Image 1 (cartoon, rainbow, N blue to C red):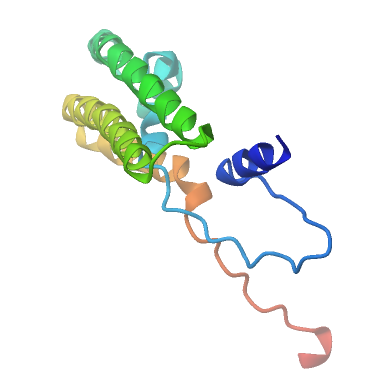
Image 2: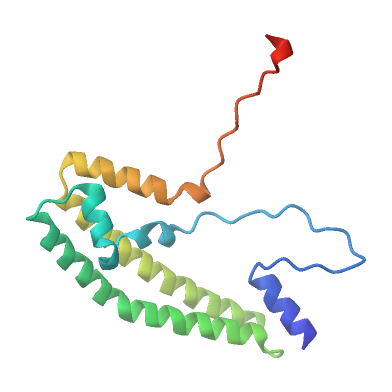
Length: 165
């Protein structure tokens, strides 16, 4: 049981401390989650999008309809993703799962992720096409702001000491 919990913790990316062993090497973070950046394009974020992009009274209902249609189109894709992820995790926890079975389940989960990403990209492009040039610039700034946790941190300029002046 302890081995299973340790395996799941490691797979989940949780820090695991084992006494008597050297500390793990510095963690290498994966590429930014592309789907996560597009999470802000959803019907629940419409008030924020409207304010940030300066949507007109004519644009807002069109954007609302687009985002509602997107949410509806995403529902079966999200259900498929959840099912594929559950299958993958189940195979990881079974002692008799073959490497081929686990790889096939991982491939299925990746395809489900890709289907969601494709739908979100389609919605993003449709939204962008509804906007004016100024609003597109603001949308670009919003996407940049959302991705900040994944961009390299800027290096601080050196601090000069009073004695150096």
